[in-house]
Length: 82
Ligand code: SF4
Image (cartoon, rainbow, N blue to C red; front, side, top):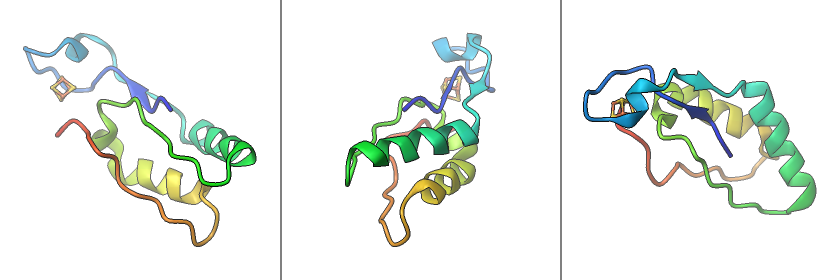
């Protein structure tokens, strides 16, 4: 899943600093996750989002709201500390 590209911050050493922050719409994220659940019973989803933490709570809310009731949603293994 792609959660966003670019970054809203401007760290001088980072290539993402020159790319405008373009977050994926949460409705699209939910729709994509729900589609995935029609194809796999217990999918493991990888996120390509170096700035997952910029919208951490909202990202987790979108993921949890797409998951079936009672399903466990675990945290990403890596995210930029921004
Ligand atoms: S916050 Fe992270 S992704 Fe953004 S410019 Fe700085 S190092 Fe790069």
